Image (cartoon, rainbow, N blue to C red; front, side, top):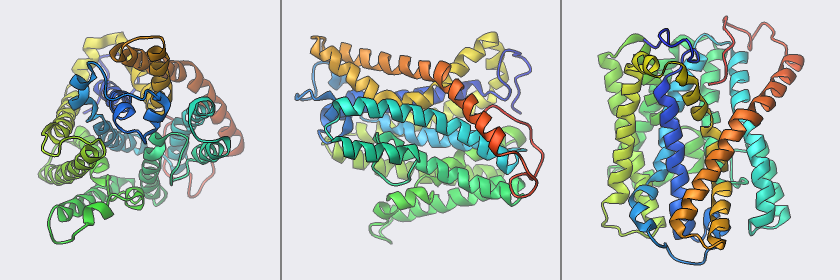
Length: 400
């Protein structure tokens, strides 16, 4: 059972390990863009911003097995999201669930997209009209590309999962959350298992399209894994939960294998090399192990950290702006350092530091103000009513 009774300084319901794990996942994605695609994929946004005009330089090739696998942070995010959203939906009305998701998603996305737009006007190769169109699409979280920064592709998938959970809340069936998401995850896993056989040629490509992603076919197994872990943390592991988790994990590993092969090709890496496949799979399985351990030992970890737990919570909350800002802020900081004559490794360190500091500033100072203002607008103009958005008693929680 999740609890933080032993640590009065910790936020209610905090799983302390998740804050560290999701920050690490964002760090992996950042490393992928700053230490891999910026140098190896000339068509990428990172390479266009870096404008280095040189091959993969200096000591950075030693990082390549890790940096080329940093995209694995995205499936990790989806597992964490399944866990967090299941917790958020517990006991919530449809309105409170929508409010919590809007407050968590929109203020940060709007601010970070605006920062990125300003930077893009100065450094991106596209014209003002094209960038403005991409910026406006980002502000409304339009589900199809292109956005002001490619990293926004995951938000549409998150919103699809939120809509699935909201539908259950609106129907008054939160008691069916676990089995409903399990069915979603099993359907996703089945699709990937079929794609691994010669029975349906090209199915792996079909279920990796944007439409399949938005329909939760591609990543449904990852969201389901998070929900099953949440359910087990509350009521224990059963044979059925273990079976669902095993099948969803199988589908997830097959999906990751497909992405690893695609990435290996797009980066121009040796098709026979083991690292592009083994490293992301190892990182993912290691994450799941730490995830399960952090849930199991949560009370002990909270006691160990004591009143330091909110500091780690602050780091966890910086994950979202770090994910949204790291490409433009990090790569442009690298570009500036390279122009000053620093070597690529020092420039990479400066880019990472700049992105992390920017994320901490947004999550610590800017986002709370924007969130309070949006909450005020919601409270003034969308008063709670009985009916579809007001069923089931709930308590107001901070957005997870």
